[in-house]
Image 1 (cartoon, rainbow, N blue to C red):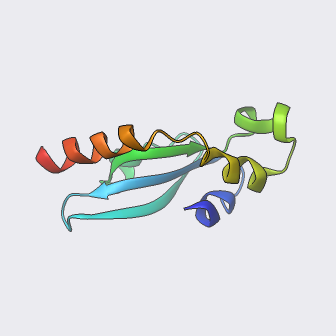
Image 2: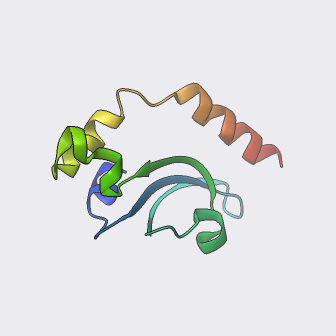
Length: 89
């Protein structure tokens, strides 16, 4: 997910989503403000905002450092709960 997210050209999002049709997790990206579920059909579980406003003050233009440090603060219990809800609906 890190590599896909860092590779977003310009502004956008890196996503971990749940594919209900195939009952599996998927990693994808969306440009700008494009919503995950409406554009891909994936249920959003975890999103990483890579618009510069999300990281510029602390990381300047070093997006990879921002994305690598995001993993230190992800609430995996919340992600797991989102997955549980997505699978049950």
